[in-house]
Length: 211
Image 1 (cartoon, helix red, strand yellow):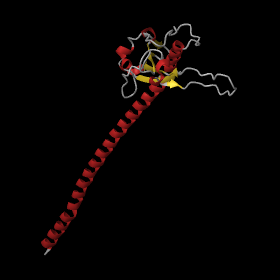
Image 2 (cartoon, rainbow, N blue to C red):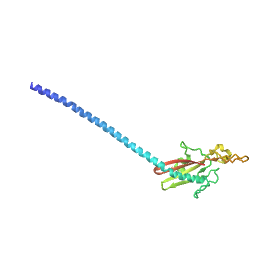
Image 3 (tube, rainbow, N blue to C red):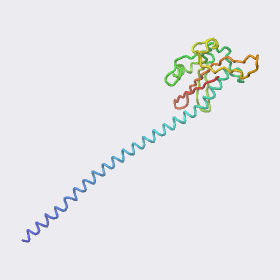
């Protein structure tokens, strides 16, 4: 009788210890899953921070390229219009013909890509082979530009103004009898496209319409 009691107690004790061992294994498995999930979350967070830093850096480079681009627009305007007082820029005497020395084309070249950038500016090698290039030591940027008169063909735009993007002529609003109304000839638009190459091999493109 005494031996049966001891056997029953031993059996009871062994039955109590078995669930504890199983619980320890489940906790370890859950802990491993949590650690893997936390590791994946940490990797995703690091990649997100790196991507954000890259985007912010690109935006800062883009903003920094705007000021040097304004310098190129001013030089192009000085070449186009004789009233610009810039001694270092040669004026374009005949706007009805191409002038490679001033990166000037008397007609739209019709080589734009989907962004509206002329083919000559799409590659750095061809862009900086042009005659007019600029550099800004302060911002460490290089610039070049192309001026295109927004006409289908070179020549006098007054002969066929329908083939040019022009500013509407100004007519005199006067109504005095016998006075001939003053009508100015249509003035074509000039498109200036600028390529700005900055630090970290960044390239930005700007455009301005002049008249």
